[in-house]
Structures are given as C-alpha cells and as structure tokens.
Image 1 (cartoon, rainbow, N blue to C red):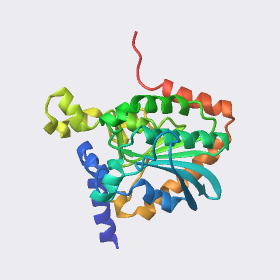
Image 2: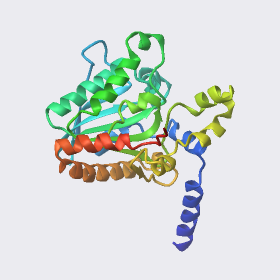
Image 3: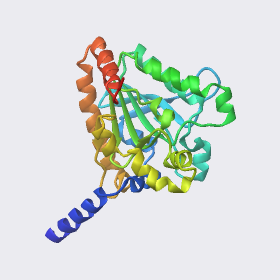
Image 4: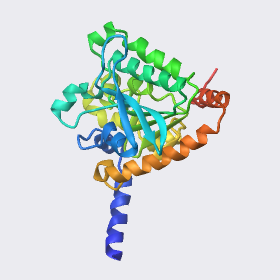
Length: 281
C-alpha cells in the first residue's frame, strides 16, 4: 500500500509539472469530457431548449433548464463532438451567431424567472466563416458581453477544455469564472499567435508558454477565480469524480451568490472585470 501511494505521489508530481503545451494537448484531447458529459452527471434533470428565434438552432451551443440539487438553473454550454461525425455536426465546438443569440435568449429568460446561470465553455473560438460574418458574428458576441453585465441573477462560467478568444468570452462574463486544471483560456490559439508574431505556426509550443494561457497562470493574474483540480492524468480518467467536484463547488457558490442583493451582484461583477490588468497614463 505504501509503495502504491509513493508511486502515485511521484506520478502526481510529474503530472502537475507539465508545461503549457502539455496542457494545451490535454485540453484538446478527443477523449476529454464534453459539456454534455458533465451536464448529464451534474444535474438531476436537463431539458434542452432550441433555437435563437432569429435564424437557426446552432448545434455547437447546447442550452436549457436543469435541476441542481433540486434548484432550477439555466445551462448554456459549448459542445464539441467525440468523433469526426459528431464534430462535423457540432461544427467542432465553434459557434456561429445563432449559437450566441440562442445562449443570450436563454440567459435573458433565466433573468426573467430568477434562475442562476451556469455556462460551460469549450471552444477553439467562434466560427470565422463568411456566412457567420454575414449574419453578424461580431455583433452577436458583443451583445452577449454587454447583456451579461446587466443580468440580475448569479452567473458561473466554467472553462472545461479550450477557451478561445471572444468565442469563449461571450459566455464568460460571470460573477465567478472557473477553469479545470488542464483547460486553457486565451485571446487566440497558440498556432494563431505564433503565426502573427513570428509568421511561423510551428512555434506554437513556444507561443503557449509566452501567452500565459493555463489555469494556474490566469488564477495568479486574477483573470479567473478558481482552479478545479482534475483526477490524476486528466478529467478523462474519471469523469464521475470530476463531475462530483464541479457539482459540489456549484452548489456552494450559488448558495453564496444567492445571498447577494441584485444591486450587490451587478456591482461586484462590474468591479471584478474593471480591476483586471494594469492601466498606465
């Protein structure tokens, strides 16, 4: 037993010392649990709602009403596939304007009926195709950012895999933003960063270190509020355990946020984002 514990400690230490690119690789693994994997385990029930009431029902964004420990909540999640066929259906987790508008419709509904909002973020970024631009991709993301600041219910956003650019931020204006230990959150992909900075996407590993995209770095800089520890080897090794951790944290945090008045909630959310970064005159 002692020998097993010793081996486990060595493994954990080695795993925790992984560099930024190792965590990028883990965050992108096809075996990594998707948002629906967590939703189906965390919530007592889940009823999916469809459509943005403008144009389409974007399958890369899943949303609806669930029960968390008996309390109704609204869930908005970016969903990737587990294989090529599913990824094509889900557009590889890259929402179009319809996805952001669907998410906002459900969040405003939650505000009307006083339901806490829980967002699961997992996207390499918003879809950048011509059709998305034609239907107002930038406007849809910007409107989410603006409207989420004014929602008078608790909002918690959890980055469970990739959190890429404005595509992720559109569901991450929250009272509390969490990241799984091996997830990433960045202004763009390391490949895109390297392509812009050095005109060489092959330098993505070097870019990942410079960008400070890991949960550990972002917690240190105050960009996120909590890092959720994953099972040894990554969340895919024990989805049930990871889901249990998220559920316990959600129940506790929503209970705390529920004690705030609507005015306090809005002011604290505003202050949280205003104090990020350094301003020099």
